[in-house]
Image (tube, rainbow, N blue to C red; front, side):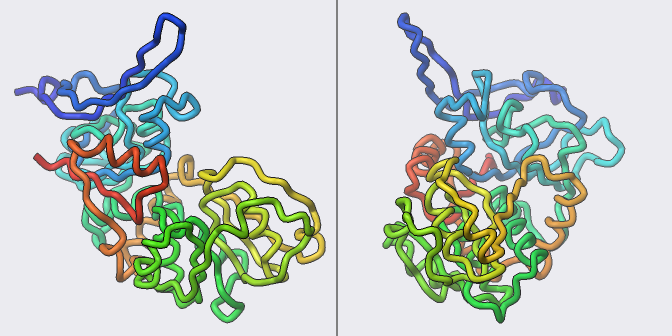
Length: 339
């Protein structure tokens, strides 16, 4: 059988519009043909994907993530090349795709096949399995970029504790594990009491609740507490963290689950010389992605990596995406697409 005529299973999100013009969205498992996939140089048989907040938004019809429906979300995919028009990749190569337009407006990793441009693809490093690459996924990769940027801005283990917000989520839990492995004292901020033991097992030395950080504090500066921070939530929590950094400290910002906005003043920046560092993993140049994947397959691969995840099957995917959207998931959720 020609590959283009091969059937495969995928989650498909559809849009329905009422007589009043209101749009609603529903997800179901469907059978598709490989020929229905978008154009691209490389066809990949997906073995694993992972669940991210952006996937949950796409599944709920967020037009800031996905403009056109029906659509298959999944911003992460790891699998085996089935066909390639680019000589850089051969059938049988084990590869990773995260970011760019995958799962946003290009059918993504919640299907058993994807077809993508060769420029989006990294060959899997030898130190990771396909499943392990998706335990990391976009969330863990983004956390690693945050840590890298903090280190490039002078963070050292002897400067004091590093705070991680949203610590029970995908980005936060990986950041806790990685920072701990690199020898940092880690303070984990979480609103989930049930995740506290999990975070201690990952290496958190202190746990704090998020209650005192969720609203605007009128004081221009707060007590100096942390040498650095990884913030995965945004909103007023982020600015309260900025106001609590030690002199010269930095916070790497990569999330907006609390809010994309926050009240701010210049005082922490001009009186304590702190830094707010933006981190993006979507459009990061492919060479930087390749370098980071090599790090994550080497000494940046957390010893507790497999503690970070639980497995999800296609049949349970819609419910799992609801958990991610509602903030009820802990660690990483990895989708297995094996038959």
